[in-house]
Length: 331
Image: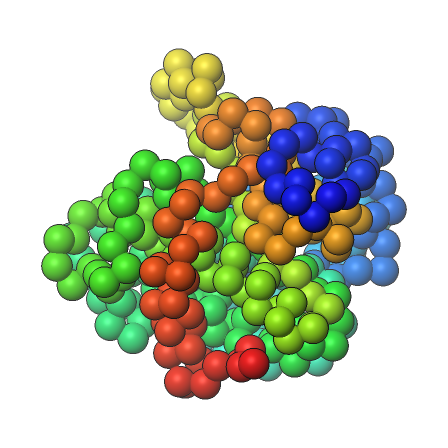
C-alpha cells in the first residue's frame, strides 16, 4: 500500500474489502486471531459484544473487561453458544475509575497482549455537569481518562510487542465544535457537547499516539475507529444482550436510510484489530463507514480538529495528568 493512501476502500491495505457485518465476515477473519489475546472494555453489550463475538470466532483469546460480572457472564454464554470453541475470560474494569484502570493494568502487564480495544464509555451523558476523575466532567472521565490510565499502565508492552490499541471515536466529532481551552467543560456545559468533546479527545489522543509510537520506533500501533451511527433497533437480536422493545425497533427502522446495526458498525473495529495491512498502513490511519454514518468499512478521514496540534497538545496533557504527571511515551 502506498504511504499516501489514507482514504478509500479498505482493499487499499492489500487484503480485500470486508462484508457489511460481522456474521458475513466469518471466513474472512477465520484464523487471524489464533495465538492472539484481545482485551475489549465494555464487551458485554452493543459494539463490544459483536466485536468480542467476531474476535472469538477468529480464534483469539478474548478478555471481556467489564464492570458488571453478571452481564459479562451472559455475554460469554451467548458467545459460546455461537462459538463453542471460544476462549473467553472476564476481568473487572470500570471505565470512569482511574483506580480500576490501575488494577486492570497490574494484571494485564504480565500478559502477552496483541489487541487492546477501548470500547467502554457513555453515550447518554448527564443533563447537568457531574464531576468525574481529576475534575473533568463525567463523559470525559469515562470515555477518555480511564482508558488513558490503562494505556499508561501498559506502556512497557507497547514498547516490546506489536500491540494494536484501538479506540472508538464518533461521527459526533464532525457535528459539534470542540473547544481545546474548555475540555473540562467548567462553563458552557451541554450534554451533547460533553459527549462530542470526549470523543474528539479520544480520537486526537489516538492519532497523536500513533505518531508518537513511530517517533519512539516502538512496534505497536494506535488506530482510531468510528462505527458510524449504529443503533440497537437495527441490530440483530441477542438474548440478554440486544432486545430492544418493539416500539424502539419501529423508531430505529425509520432511521435505516442513515443508520445501521451494531453488528455492522463493529466491522471497522474488528478490521482494525485483525487486518494484516494495518501494520504497514500510514500513521494516523482511521477506519469508518463509507458513507460517514453507515456503509462498508473504509479508510476514512477523521474530523480536522482531531488532527490538529491545537487539540492534540492539551489532550496529551490530560493523558499525562491521568498517569500521575508522567508521560509513559516520553521521547
